[in-house]
Length: 262
Image (tube, rainbow, N blue to C red; front, top):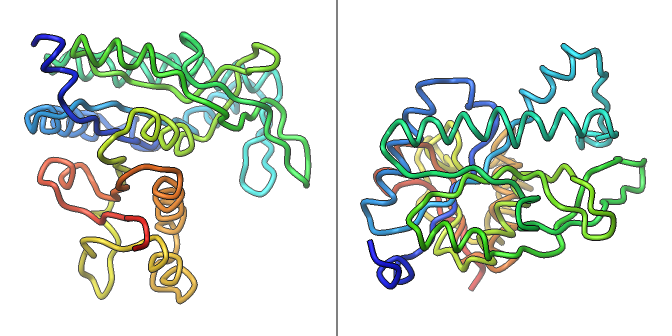
């Protein structure tokens, strides 16, 4: 593929949670989903988490997990585990899967080339340690990979703008920032459900305002709430469309699209 053709194609950011990455079937499905995005003429960019694997390794190393309002407290020792797991184990697991499926892929983190710049996140209820809040995205490395028709697989471990340290960043926030910077046509939050269900049917599209109302009314509940809130945050931060779907939905273009209010 020549560079001019590559630059004319649209970008689709796929955000993958960490819990599914232990499942070989999920990884196989992810490779198929990436192939489907490419077959549609788009450039996929993957951003992944890996919190469960971080927790498991912390336990093996005798490090106690601490949280403040659900946010992982990341001291220096924990940060070493986070970076090893996210930028190493989880990242390369995805890359190996894609390469094995004959898809060119390269694993990077927000630290590489200063792709994601962050500052320390401050929380009123306690010090979170090395947890970062995204300030900016430098898309030079990502665009270089995209121009070479290589799928970037991005770990959310990011570069501290003020102290040059590595920081732990919420993968949803990293994916949103990357999608906005790259001008992605959509950001897909890959879930284990086909979308937002109302009366057992998938809602095709919902505005951010309507989604918030459904959360308040209890129509959207449980584990779907953080997924929807992440999608709402994405469209409010400049992403054209955020989609909640499963791997099958990535391949056949179904799911729930969360769009900005008109």
